[in-house]
Image (cartoon, rainbow, N blue to C red; front, side, top):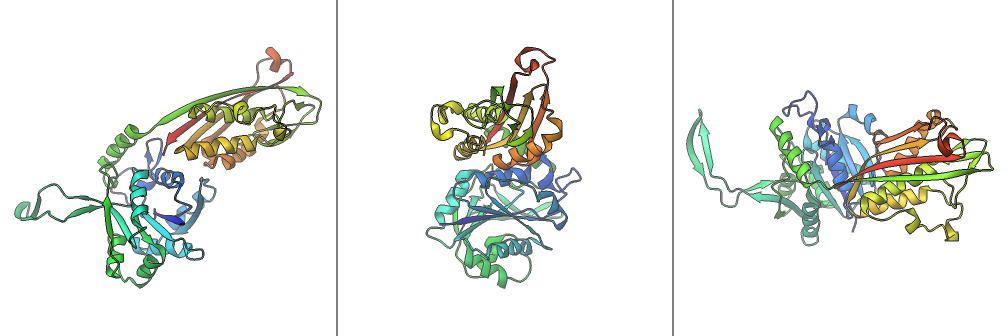
Length: 379
């Protein structure tokens, strides 16, 4: 059963302060939009994501790398139009279900997504909500002028899930603005099931909400750091492979695979962060099938293990230690190649080099060493 996600991030909300739309403000080491994207990308039931953005923000996400297929589209004058634009993008290859999520809820958790998807097996629509527990007043002129019965009242959350065809038709026939997609669905006569929400799935609206969201995210985050180190000697040849990029040289690196010492160190860093051993355990050099293999196979495997374990790789840092070849001219291409394999934005990849000042085997130009660090966050 295919399920897509539409993340609505086309608003210009500045009430949260900072002089920047709230979805692009820093939050827990990322941005609200990054956190929402990462959560849905890490969920095994989501097969593609549509991100609805202000028109002038589209270009900034053109090279955004995510673990799932990411489709960009422009938002409209109001939320309903933005959602409809996102649904129309999916209509060329419609999914069975679609989850529509407000980017201003970056603390959404996988179990909330699970509950919505499960409810869609027996209902055409489902949404998370929390029962109202506080006393409710009606007011006027700063005075309490009445009370309101709170029975059967709920606080709505997202993601709100629907059978794709019915919500697309509902939005196409809807006239005017709507508070959320449940309102659009109910106006079209669609019954919406309520599933339990999450108190931490807050909507960022005011400056204080950023403080609360930061506290929630820091409290619930499982952050891992892994380190990797590798060494390969030179042998006869005319090029080396570093970070997946062929660089002409007076020698090659000796190894069972393509001897990409930098990618090996990074792969081990990811395995280390996950507590999953090292390359030698997953891809033994005694196994002939890995003879001459591209090291991208190893790095892609480590990335897959991370995602299946519920982790997002948020940053990697690779240092290559050698006298020659010169790394600087190739660092940009190396970063792009690693970002592609890791399915992260290139701004989250660092590749740099240093010499050993003529000391040791690298100083004697007998080989190349590399060390790497990877940061993983539980989505």
